[in-house]
Image (tube, rainbow, N blue to C red; front, top):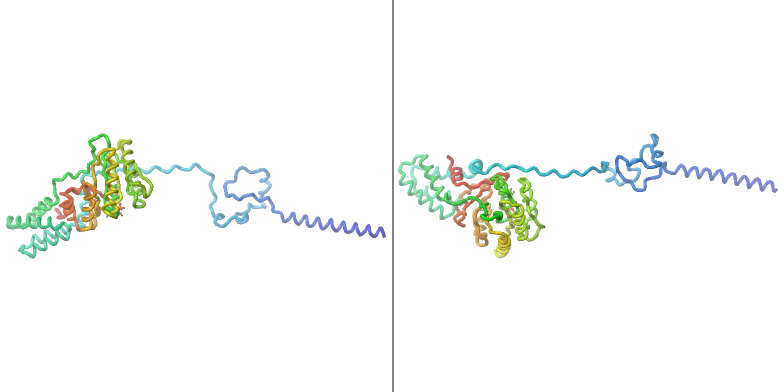
Length: 405
Ligand code: GDP
């Protein structure tokens, strides 16, 4: 009996041992071939092999894929990072050399002529009629009014033409062209000083404030003007005081960078006057020739505008005199532009006008009308969206473009 019990015990022990071995060997099989890394990182090439890693990677056991280590799909698809290389410094923007400004209007004349010569050609055709009767004079008047020359200047011109045509007697096309050119030139005015004032007369930079309603091309014009000045050998600092329109400061800075001019800017919605002040300060520190200040043109209320521009003007004048206030007007807006001109003239002392978008309108007569309205000259005209499409205004080239030569 004892022997029997002993045999049973031995048998049980033996079974237990065998099954234990099986379980433990199964467990061993379930173990992953290597210990998984604690956090999955995707770096390549791997860092120095860690102790024991060589045992993990064998030809038979290919490196586990990212899916196997359970990375989210997006990460899994992420390209393998290159080892941290020295970050490359952003390339310094290339500084452009703007084309010279002398004779720019002559070069850009074709743009003006494309849209404008309906005025000049129209007038010449009418004046060439055999019988200049009342109806014809009325048509001449209408042509001038449609081109936005304005009522009073139109009347003056028609009166002068009537008188001179009478005196002329026979009218050859060449005579008529010469006569019309002369009279249009008188109307546009050849006596104005149209140079943008960039000599301050003191040792601080000349300060030019650019005003106008947003959308007229004010910021673009400020940027283009920086190029005009740089092209003429002047050094420029820009003040991005149009803090009202988002992106105006970025836009201006880009213009500045292209010609190596620094832009002083502040936060969006910040105080325009303090930016203007800082810009002049920077201009003085740099020994710049000119500081150009782009302002916000909110026509919310006249008092609001007056407060804003008045404050900018006052703080700038703490450094020295304000040399030029340029009003930017969109030539395509006709009467609306004249209304804007009136409001701005009541708020600040405008010293010059910039007419933009003259390339897109047949209403070049606005040059005459706005000068009459404000009593200040058109100094620059915008003839396109290109960087060098802002030209100093030259009456002769303008009139030639109107009537062709
Ligand atoms: P701001 O709000 O007055 O500062 O206006 P922007 O300077 O941003 O100009 C408004 C738009 O007018 C831009 O698309 C300019 O490229 C365009 N612009 C400005 N001047 C001229 C110009 O002389 N001719 C043409 N065709 N477009 C112009």
